[in-house]
Structures are given as structure tokens and as C-alpha cells.
Amino acid sequence: MHRSIAILLYACTFSVLVVRPAAAANTGDRLHKVGDFLVRLPIRIPAAAVATVVGTPIAVVRKVKEEIRDTVKGGIDHPIVLLPALASLPFATLGGFWDGMAAGPYDACAYSNKPFSKESFSLGKEMYDSYN
Image (cartoon, rainbow, N blue to C red):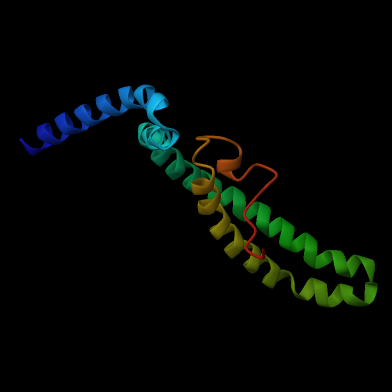
């Protein structure tokens, strides 16, 4: 009984919200944005969830690669720094892992306005940077 009432309320709300953005274009931009947000919400939530699950390992790999590259870059320029740079690789890997664990969900939520895009899966050029 409760499930059918919830489905009925959801259907009524959704049908009103689908029609509302067309009427809101005449009344004001803010109401139009709210209606547009609510209509796209059923698409954005699963898109953000999928992008979090799929994009987090991608972000981890990319961030680990960046951290290792930045760590070893100083050792390649100056051979005397190469041994400490190689010794710090485990720390760079660990730092990249945690940075990627933060970047994956952040990118998924930040780019949920473009569902299933490259940016939401942490594949775009711009990625979350915890250092800035």
C-alpha cells in the first residue's frame, strides 16, 4: 500500500516538474533552473554513482603516475638527487593513491551536470587537485 502511494506521488510530482520548466521560461530564470535541476536529478544521481565507482580507480592510477613523475623528475635533472628520489617512490605512490581516492568522487559529483562525460570519469584534462 505504501509503495503504491509513493509511486503515485512520484509520478504526479514528476509530471508537474516536466511541464513546469516550459511555463517557468516566462516567469523567471531562477524557477526554470530549479525545475531543470529537479527534472535531471534522476539521471544525475546514478551517473554520479557510476562515475564514482568507475572513475575512482582511473583517478588513482592517474594521480599515482603524476606523483611518481614529479618525484623522479628532480632526480633525473640532478643525479645526486636520484637516490633520494627513488627512495621516496613508495611515499609518492601512497600520496597519489589517497589523492586519487579524493579526486574520483569529487570529479564524479563536480561534473554530474554532464552525466557520463569524460570529465565525470576523471578522464578529462582538468582533474581535482588537492594541492590548490
